Amino acid sequence: MSTPEFSRVVDLRQCDGREIELVANQQERAALAERFELVRIDKLEARLALTREGDELRARGTLDAEWVQSCAVSAEDLPVSASEPLTLRFVPASKGDLPDEDREIDSSDPDEIEYEGTAIDLGEAVAQSFALAIDPFAVGADAEAARETLRGESDGPFAALAALKRGKDEDTG
Image 1: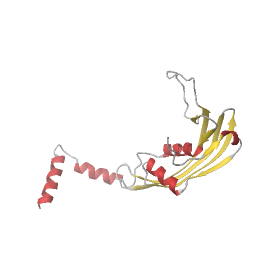
Image 2: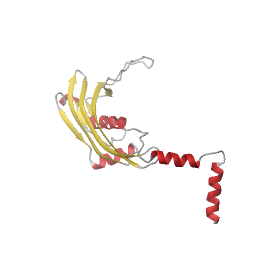
Image 3: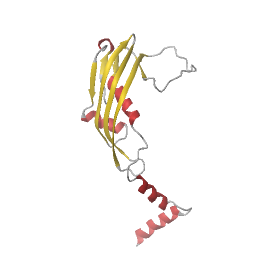
Image 4: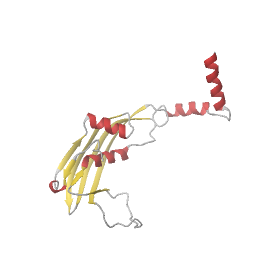
C-alpha cells in the first residue's frame, strides 16, 4: 500500500486535548490535484481539536481550501473555495459487524473512519473530506454558450455525417 499524498500520522495515545493544524505543501497539493482530477489546489488547510472518548477519537474543526477545476461543460478553469466545518470520528476497526446487518446513518453523524493499532492518518482523512467538498458537475460562466454550440452541432439525424463531410471538404479544399 502506498503512502497517501497528504499523510499526517498521529499516535492516538498522545492526542487527547491537542489542537493541530494541517497544511498541505506545494508537492502534496499537486499530488492531490492529480488524484482528484483538478487543475490545481492553491490551499488545503485544516484546524482540528482532538478529543479521546475511550477507544474513539473525535476531531472537530474547519477545512479551508481553494482550488481550480475544469467546468463540466466548457472545460474552462473554474476557481472554487470552501470553508467548512469538519467533524471526524475514528473508531477501532470492527471485527463483528455482519455484512447483512443494517445500520442507520443520520446526515448529522460525523464521518466515521476505522483504524487499527495506535495511529491514525489525519492528513488522509482531511484529503478525503476535501474530496467530498468538490462538485464534480460545477459549471462556469461559459457553460451555457458551450451547450448552445453543442446543440447546434448535434441537431438532426445526419449531423454526424455532415461533420464528417465538412472535415473531408476542408482537407481537399
